[in-house]
Image (cartoon, rainbow, N blue to C red; front, side, top):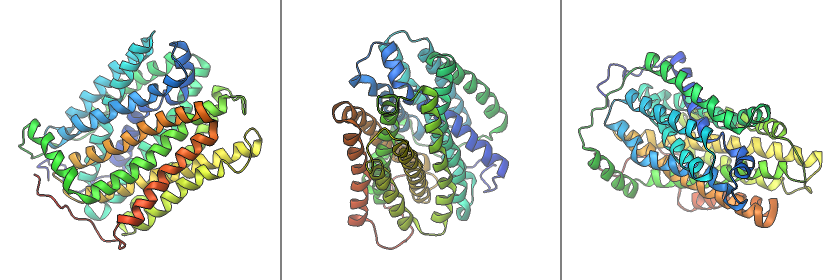
Length: 408
């Protein structure tokens, strides 16, 4: 545990809200471009098949940051690390705003992903500040802010693009990051971890954690499949809604994306359920919701008002299930060891964001070659595989996990 004077397990409601707000505003950078894949790819002369790279490279950058930057939170003062990542984010989003070719924009997208890992320094910090009996609740509340950021980023970017252009979205982001950096510098307490490992040793220790922590392996795989389905859905539905079946404008797509915000309410609920010891049952429900969300979109032919309503319902159910599952996983791994928390979190997040990157790429490919039917079948198969593995390997009791490695 940190020697910081702020690690006395007292975190106020105001600080919890501030951390949730920080997470939401920062993580939004990962998703501003998601509903704009079509307009951006056209402006930069990218092929329809390569449009998925706009989202995929951002997620790859995020994975790189999770593996190489987030572990530093177990070694260096957390507030300084968060501010450094915000500075990188400002440079990256300005690069995206000024991009006039695909190479420059995709490079900026990669760096946007790296900078956004600041949220994964903030979430373990919240867990560090919370008591054991309230850890799931606090993490769930902070994660609800993160999930609101993910879900609101899409409609915000669509509305701004409709009013101005897609370049303005990234200028807006740069201003928000600058103001947030000032607020973090003033309001966020410092946290100096007690680890004395070198950076190389810190990274090397993650191999042992990945190989010898079964609960981390299981939870990371479950969320990789869930988040892959989530990314597939939100990368392909804007293409579907803008296409001939629905012919929606960017504002119409933004209104559709707002429906998914309702799913964020599951994060604090999942934290409370996990604190009560019902992680396995809640995980099962989350996976069934994700599978069912894709299934209901295939009940009617596309193009009617009713089929659009089914897509809206699918968005809510999918976001509800994915939001709940990520918090259930975090509650499980954060209870393993306070001194390893950032490394465990980095491995957990990196694994499931690889799933997200795969989901985005596969979704665009499936939609380009087989329409929504192919994309929906691919999306539903991912949580179905997670459900199969859960029944196969997950302990049948709701027992608390323990760390099975001695890595420092």
